[in-house]
Amino acid sequence: MNRSMKPSIRLLVASTLLLSLTACVVPQVGNGGGKAGGDTVVVCHKGKKTLELPRDAAQAHINHGDRRGPC
Image (cartoon, rainbow, N blue to C red; front, top):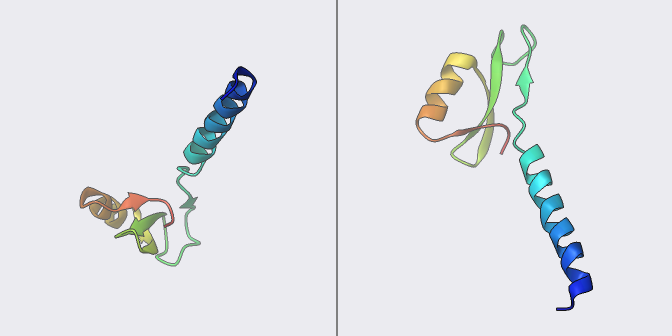
């Protein structure tokens, strides 16, 4: 690989990492509008199903290995 390609690869890697980090944003639904009613959080359940849960229930799911955000 020649030297002129190295900056391009670094830029590609940096861009990919940046996009990966922006995908970690946790979407939250405000008060009163969600399916579960009240203050809710979106959780990826078992890596397969996106759930919208009350904040307390979401914390219990996160404690056993689910993650915040959609699947």
